[in-house]
Image (cartoon, rainbow, N blue to C red; front, side):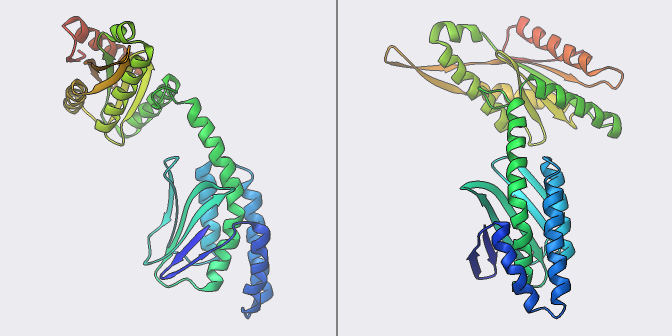
Length: 317
């Protein structure tokens, strides 16, 4: 792991056995050396035991941050792993930063940042490093578990959520709607005449088209929205906090953008360009209906769009 504090930068080995030798150094320069040393060792032991009980990354980081701030006064502690889109923050950010790049056996585990409004001393850093050494192995295990769970909910071709992930998200959105009474909408998207692409250009070209279409949709929808591959050439977008008008606007943006998408493929040493359109059904959630009814209305609106000539958006009644 790597530490940054002002202009100073040092490299340390994030292993608990190595860090324990630092505890004695903290004790020697502390008037209450025995008490302080015992406190740190007990915290490291307590942390190690607690972290081994869970594979929930959020719970693991929450307890870790609480243990650090109990021994080293910090205004904030935070963790971020961009590779797995994970993050946790505790407290309010201070002006002085203590940052660690966490790695284990060459594998990146994320970044840990502690901040406060006064500089970190050497004793503070040794305490943080001792506790961080207890974090890396449980964190690695939790991240591996999280990654496996994510893969089980991911469409292997496009990388977006699969049908199971969509069902989980719909159930979650229903709870949000019931609790906060916020609007919610669904888009059913179907690539027009997709079978012709497979027949004329081959399945590799069809797969490339599906990838390009899904990536284009992801580039348009908001970060809070979710995209799923329902099956074949059909996609579903869940739009939280969206009424019918805003959902219709989003659907039109998607439709127009996909008209411009080009997929390149090679057939018999010739380069071909594939362009597609989509039909979209829009349905806004009615509090008197169940989510299955919402899905059916969005699906019916999609079929109306296809029967009316394709490459258009239709809103459910």
